[in-house]
Image (cartoon, rainbow, N blue to C red):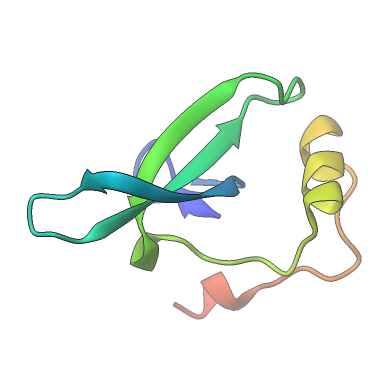
Length: 86
């Protein structure tokens, strides 16, 4: 999960991997995160994000897709609420 498209707005995305040879000017490595469109997750945004901007969720890919395709109606059995503590 990360703040997108602006601070205070949160989206669920899928970590694709490291950005490889793409780095920020200060040398910080970026991660690739795919943010699917709802309810059709075959299109979306690919964003490059520093690791410290990502909030990991205890959710499988299957649970994440189910959550997105259902437009948030079907939630995983366990929801990570740690982002509220930050």
